[in-house]
Amino acid sequence: MKRILAVMVSIFMIATSLVGCTSNDKGEKEETAGTSMLEGSTIRVVAAYGGKEEIFAKFTEDTAVKVEFIDMSSGEVLARTEAEGGKPMADVWFGGGADSFMSAGEKGLLESYVSPEEESVGEKYKGDEYWTGVSLVTAGFMVNTDVMAEKGLQAPKTWKDLAKAEYKDEVLMADPSISGTNYAVVNCLLQGMGEEEGWKYLEELKNNIPFYAQRGGEPPKKVAAGEMAVGIIPMSGEFVSMEEKYPVKTIYPEDGIPWVPAGLAIFKNAENIDAAKAFVDWALSAKGQEVIRDKDPRVMVREDVSVPEMMNDINIEGLIDIDLSKFGSQRDQILESWAQRMAK
Image (cartoon, rainbow, N blue to C red):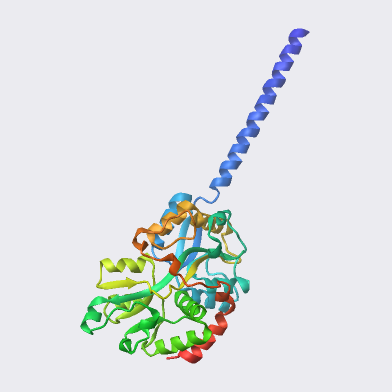
């Protein structure tokens, strides 16, 4: 009898052990499935960012999520999404001026998502529940040194220099209703100088601008080609590095550097919401921030990621002191005033 009981106890223990193993195996399989469920999926990204092909390739390498992208300025993204009744053109919106992201969030065009990585993002670079900054877009000047020498011009050091009569028809900037960077320039100058003095200055500057470019990347390209002497440009690595190939020089204005966070958001009703969140998390992680910084050098929003080497000469203290909330709330008013005062 004792032998039979011993056998029965042994069978019960083995069975219990097998059940436990099965349960653990299943748990491991479920966990593995959870971490790999995005593998092989694809997200669509609308981007206004330099080095994006390499940035997306590294994201794919790290996560096995593929990326399809289109290049479009932030003003165009906002206008098109509104015109299509909020239908998302992609899953993720990467890069471009914060004003368009703010407006899109207020109009219900973006998905609410706050990444856990935002804990390491500087407070003044954060957005709200609908978007966050991913890097800083700063603005400055690019001059063609050959053109400047040929015309006997000195490179401008300040915004006030740029409005001097000697630069008539020599300055190019992009239309701020299309370019988020140039809207940031206008808003920062109005905040920094005061509205009355700011508009007075911009109307003086207008005399030196023959036309407004239709994309933010057009002024540096025309300056590099020798078609213009001076361009108001985004001071990103994509354009600063042009100094190595063309007779151009980039300059941070001494009387104030306009800036704005480059935005990052997920579109409302995105088709691949989980992979979109994975991209946001990756882009705000220390590793992702370093990848993005190295592929298109900019000051990044994480406080533990250093300034890129080619931008070591930037004076962070020289950033214009701004109220970021005004970028969204004042957008329509400023652009309406721009159209009335600054039309070409």
